[in-house]
Length: 244
Image 1 (cartoon, rainbow, N blue to C red):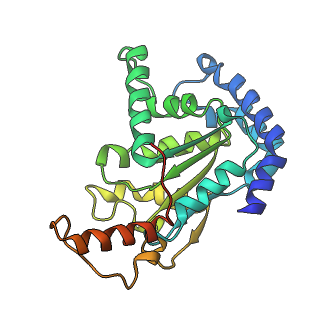
Image 2: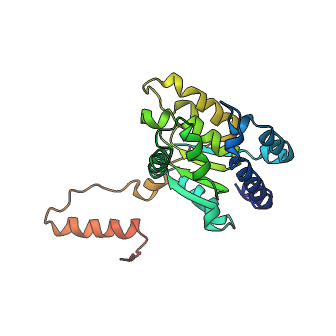
Image 3: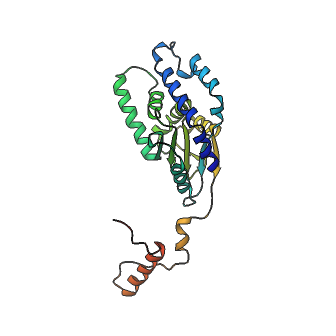
């Protein structure tokens, strides 16, 4: 992750310049041919060619058992990024999808029934100022989410957004046994193509201090149980008082 962080910081200027030029192409939407998307335009293809080295920056999909330190690793990466907070964002998956659906609702209201690729507009709008997006606990369960993720992430990558994901599942197990999952499989293929998939299986560090401890029912009114619980609490918290 250290090398990955350095790469992003080294390419920050180029990423920012790319986004500014791409914004100019998006503002020319009215000049597109019928049924043409941004990715179909000559201007977009020329832009991709000029910034071809940016295509080599892979996103990261970090998966493993609960408690193995994935979120902690991503938090360290996020804090190590010397970027303005407007250029980076850290969201839990559920919070991320909530923001996406709220943005989709607003854009649909603006379009007022006009047939268009709303999800692409949502993606372009969402990452307008972003360079790096961190999504924690990626877990697709809802069919409404599953059906829009491919188009959404295609717009992210068209914007050269760098996405870092943590999940308890490998990509191939996302939305497992979900309704109409065959429609979701192209997103999995795209995700694996665009990302370095890393496995981080290890012990559950959250339980490390609790191993070998006795178990008690609490509260029982038994003074010895209260004393034992307090000792256990002090051990688990390293005698930290905490803040309120």
